[in-house]
Length: 246
Image 1 (cartoon, rainbow, N blue to C red):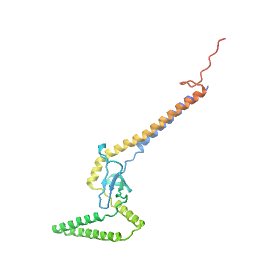
Image 2: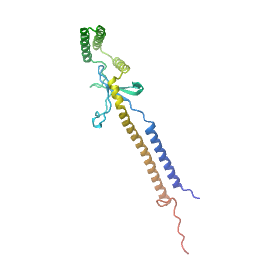
Image 3: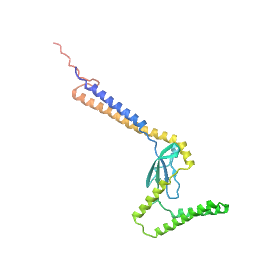
Image 4: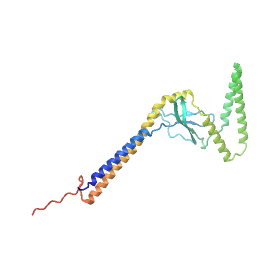
C-alpha cells in the first residue's frame, strides 16, 4: 500500500497547531503574574504617589511615566495577607537628574516643624514639643551640612554616592498609609483583571500567529509538491492514466 505523505503532513500540521494552542492557553492562564504596583516621587519631601490606572481608559495619564531609576520591593505587605510587588519610580528633574536634596523643600519643611513646635508648646504638650524640636534641630543641621557641601566642588563619584544613599533610604523607609492601602485593596481586583485580559490577549495572539503560520506553511508546501508531482489540488495521488481501447 502506497504511503499517503499528504495525509501525514496534514496530521503533523494539526499536531503542531494543537500544541501551539495548548502552550498559548497554558501561558495565558498559568504564567500570569499580577503587575507591580507603581509609586513615584520627585524629591526627598515629595510623598510617594500611587499611580493606579483609572477605571475609565480616557482618564489614564498620558504617555509613560519617566523614571531616572526604578527600584523593586517584592512581596510588600499592603495589608495583612495582601502581598504584592511594588515598583518605586524616582522621577528626574528638568536636567534628567534625581533630586536627592532640595534646599527650598527643606526650608519649607523646617518652617512647618517650627510652627508645630510653637503650637505644641502653646498647648502645653511638652513631649510633642520636645520631639518636634529635635526634628527641627536635625533639619537645621542637615541644611547647614548641605550648604557646606554646596560650597565644595563635588566629584561625580561623590554625587553618585549621595544619590545612591538617598535612593536606598527612600526605599527602606517606604510605607503605604491606610487610605492608600484601602484604595489599592478596592481597585486591585479591577487592575489585575484588566492586566490578565491584556496578558491573555497578547499570549493568545502569538499562539494564533503560530497556528496560522503552520497552516500557511503546510498549504504552500502541499501546493509546491503537488505542482512538481503533477497531483491535482484536493487529491493526494496522481490520477491513474486511462487505458486506451484497442
